[in-house]
Length: 207
Image (tube, rainbow, N blue to C red; front, side, top):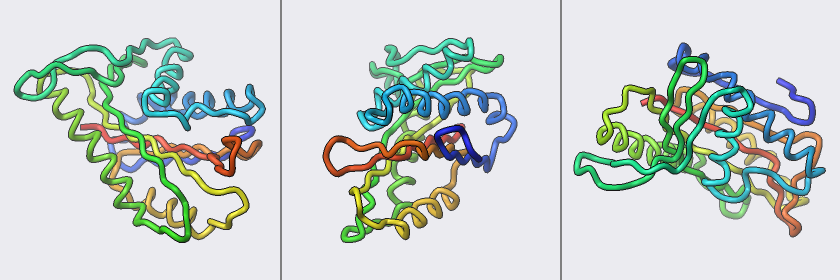
């Protein structure tokens, strides 16, 4: 699927009814990444900083659609009711969603190959653990969503086509409800050194 300036893939595996309710948010998140890259003429992106910054781009998608979002708010977590913070709460399309998020950077390096499916699964499972603790403590009636953002880094000029194919295969093999992959096709996102960050993937599982 083409989005002017980007190539996107949206794969829905499970919980289609729930995913459909927030699909406009997912699509808007993809557009926000494209819009910001175009705004900065490819000199910056929203996803190469940290988890906190990337979560804010998802919250921004909710706001742009007329929904409401709150980030990093205080809450109790776990059966022992410890103090903590929830990454994101949003409401859109008559659906309220509580999210816990993780972020994973994958370095596509032929000399240090990894099992991408294992890496991504570990990150998503960590988010699932967090949202279960949040849900158990607060007894939310809202939908609970575990998400992980995966950012790929590669070195300029290095052929990593095989590794990119392995990464895509891992995404399709992953046990999740959905994933949305954004890849810049209009600009090459360079960090000013030799690193290229052309794509980000949002992976989600309702818990």
